[in-house]
Image (cartoon, rainbow, N blue to C red; front, side, top):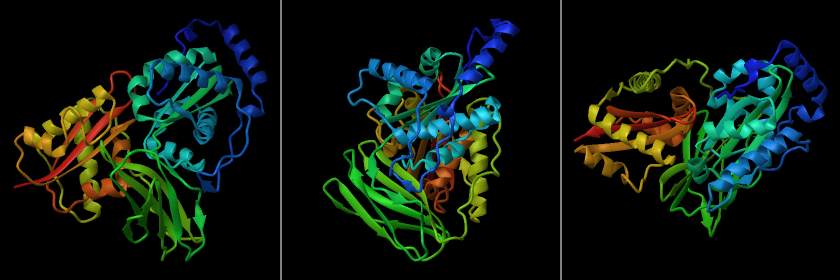
Length: 410
């Protein structure tokens, strides 16, 4: 998302040139990128935060404080570093890159700073003065709803000669587990030792590991609020680790990270083959997601799923409810769980599952589902033959709420 200064068009050429020269003089070592880290959740290198970052962070907290939160959001140094590096990249490549700054790229910047929180929200914009950031954040972040969902925040800003002022990146994440430090790379034959602290009430916690030859699932040992698991590795290459929890809002992905085993090995791949298209409404977005779902199923030699009108109605109502409440969950105080929503539509099912997300674009939601073992399992379930897709575009921010209901009827 790109916020702009409404008065920028009123500047004279001389004033714009003078402002650009001032900004160049102001730019300093406080505007450089932050080196990536070798371990998850183990701190970040020291760097100086500039005046713009400090002021805009204060603006964000003023907005959040007015929301009268039961639990205040926490300033997160790793998120700040990831946001700084994002802003540096946007300055280097030009603000036009904002339109192509997808969720997977944002994940790379977060991952490079050791961030493991799976659920995140991002915002990118430019301002002439830091004081103008508050209005853009109010317009583009559903702050009252988001601050009920997100717990941590980080702001990065760098001086820009053109457009003059600051380029800003903001990240919000939800932290449900606090993982102990974990290396991003280990030697062949070593185990991946995962441990951490549970931060929210939950009824279940599991660990999924996507390796070069499939997905393995583990039940960690849990003692009080602490959990631990030892994951053996038998092959080299990327291993994507997903920590899932079940809370009063249903199952969620609490943490996601990638550990490289050995010096060389197969990659789990990326999604560069997915093109972003202009989506002009619910029907357009639904058709795009159905296309991506069936393309992904075809890669696994699975038959396509077909769209079902009743599942569509069910999914659409849930997507619109999530947009209204700002809460992305499987269990709702309004509509119940997936079985309750199916009964309301008189759907007699033998099997039914659900994926939910809020993201920048519908393709980003699909990528997020595919990178998560538990969500991908629903998408690639050989027992289902129908799908319903709900899409609700936010009216106040550049985001889209997505629901996918997979089913086999009786």
